[in-house]
Length: 446
View (tube, rainbow, N blue to C red):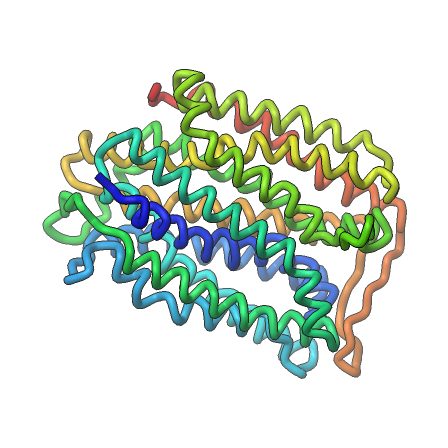
């Protein structure tokens, strides 16, 4: 029986990865790369797309490597313990803007971003796989998964809510602010990741294959539940990816900058913070909700319908700062759905891993959970890349001038604003429709 301390320790892993690094990368990076770092829209879009092709290879390989790791610390925990420092350090360097020209900045951004994706994979794939070896009790898996989501959303809430106030406290240029905050959050992510590795326990031993073969990779594509769940996972991250990637542009260009209400600064990070705290609450409620509904799949569909209805509703709210609380209210409702389904996704990956072990005779837990991480990065970054691409098509142009200064030009203001609004609402709604169709086809009935 797992202790409360261990569940909190497990939650710290996603508090670091999901609540700090990935949250900032998802919501801040598109705007950071174009408006602060000084990349062109095309460069930003290409950077995010290339990183995804890189992950398609590294994530499954990492999963297979993690499954075969044997050490005094276990199978998956050593990757957290020894990966913690490079994880935080590279993240910090990624938010630093060097005094280079456009070509130098491009090389720096591409190199550091690919390194960040590699170290994120090396830490997060084993982290996800831990769920498969900490317990064999299905109800306890749901609890661990719920703690994980609460940890991620609670830290995401703290990160996003504090961001504008920390920027103001640091002062100086935007580039200086992001560099300092990158160092601070990178250090915090390192400490949390290390704590996760030290506080958790591996109670179950994976049934290892005798030697490395490509058979587990081939078996994945014969695993029908894995195929559907991976596609569902990509959809969930496309849904969140569009919204987070475009939130900064939405506040800047649709609502004309930060909105201050009774002393509260509502910038793009705070705007999404309301969703984070809602996800945290309903992530904790998810196991109870799932038990009452009767199955994970049915609970997932209900949560997805909440996201669909609220996303469509958002599109019809006027682009006016005076409607800020209506917009915040819809973000909160959407986040009820996200909070309910997020723990289910990882619990369902554990079900798929158990199904694969029973069917194939050897464990592929790391490989299967790596597909969850790959789906996370694929959905988030491709959506970020598409946001940059669609904004460029609508008339948004960014770049660096001869003096190394960031320059923004908008050739069609109305088209850009309408595109931003649709990217936050109608595009995610269309993704949810696909998600619900896939859930109906998902074969595991737990």
